[in-house]
Image 1 (cartoon, one colour):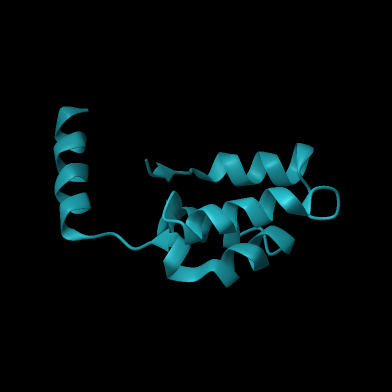
Image 2 (cartoon, rainbow, N blue to C red; image 1 turned 120 degrees about the vertical axis):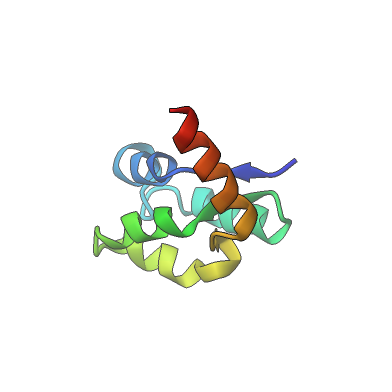
Length: 86
């Protein structure tokens, strides 16, 4: 099963319970799970994290497109359908 993580997962982990200095194993685990194809996020999340200009944004930048997936045609179609529904 694959999981798609939103910005809040990273931001709250970084700010509250799993800072890089306190629990680096959490961040290593996320990267490891991405290597197994289990965990991803999207470019928009990476953009939001980059706005922080902090240790979290540097971590996200290192992961790149392998972790933060670019939008594809199928996603654009679904976003349009969701927008029409809303």
